[in-house]
Length: 195
Image (cartoon, rainbow, N blue to C red; front, side):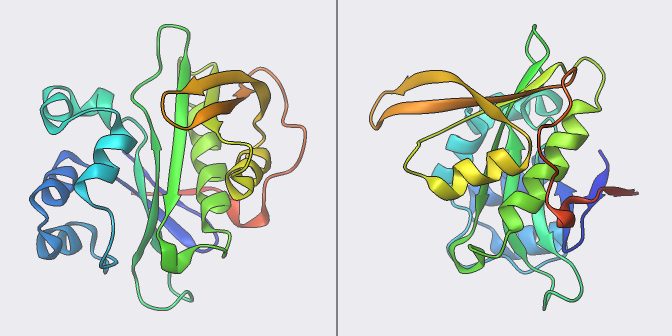
């Protein structure tokens, strides 16, 4: 899978080896695999299980499907030392209707700097350019204004509601490949590909 380059980030593919290092809590191996410093409290096994909607056995059984499009956000030169600042993931390969669901997270010390928008915009553009992808969807809580803004910047529009089993109603968002984006993406999301 291709490394995506934005103005301030490298979006590096998440591999099975990366996931296994996280599950082993092997920070040294993880930093070696991604060639970047990893924050102390990130990512943690429970976050990985939520992000990938699967346990390690499911990921191992079909990494190409489970890790489809998933990338770590790594700061580029000019942003200080090379470090993991978050991740942007799709909850598996496109479904039978050609829809992929995007999710993202920025580690606490890097929040509020626009990394989430920059990475999500680039990942959504990449996904919509892939064969068979008809739409990118996402779900968030309306009270999570930072998340709503990220989705809007990536061109996703409100498309409905669903119930979260513990936290209540979530708003659904979607961007279809056959509809032009209503608003421009953030400038940092200019997409280049490396490797």
